[in-house]
Image (cartoon, rainbow, N blue to C red; front, side, top):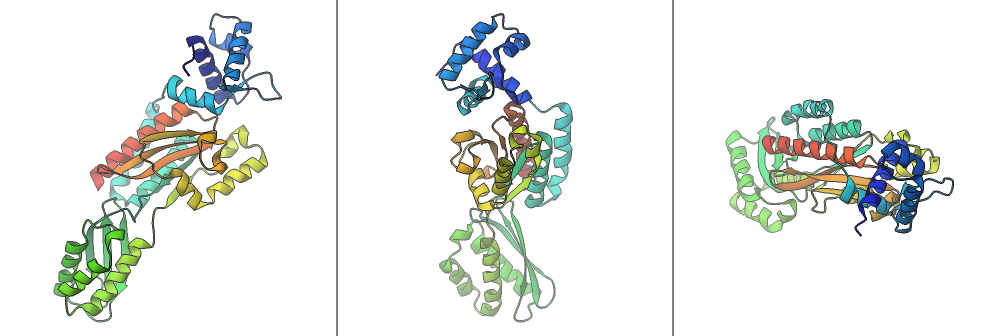
Length: 341
């Protein structure tokens, strides 16, 4: 539903004021603070209409109103003014991420999660790339000694896996190079799920005489890729105590309990194809986050979406600031991953 201009202005003023103060907003506050040129009585009537339409709620302990989930949704979709990071924040973001080019993606993600939490002052979460959905980009076998080989696997989502493999007999450089080249030829551009028995049998057929060595290398390589799928990194888990919504000890305990459930969080933050998504209160499918808002953005390696970065906090979230910062960090992260991998 499209509201009239006056109702839109009043709704925006109430959301902005409630985000700032955490106190229910009355008609007198709107009249004094926002100088609309209309009386408190007129504002009160408009607020009553907005409540009837479901955009505002009236806590039983107060004569003022607060936004409902529907009110926040209208605000985010139609009224919000996205705030770019301040010059100081933008400089801090770039300075912290500028060294990420020399890091593996896990380190980049950890750095990004901490940064997002510090700048937004909410709980930040970053979902790492899924190994199962990644394709092998390259395999490098490095001889450590006569019996040990270090295998380094790089995927197209910038995941780098290291695994030390113990061989049943000595191996020379030329043999190791031959096996290395064959593994790259047969496994490059395949996902973990595509590396099946027929692929492995092809490698064994073409490298006859090396069954013992291949039987030591291939299962370990395969297990190292399959054993760890996407992970989730959290920072700022105690930031909720800065917000009066969580002065209720039970509410705070429920939130902290949620943050301990990795599988639930992975499900909440999993990518669904949207570049940036805001989920408010009851819009969230998971019952445990029905009184929270989640803002998340996807990040990419090359042209492939590989994970998500986001924040979780109360529905009384500073949407304009968080969306601006999240978009800025995601854009910078995408640039780093594009140039580094």
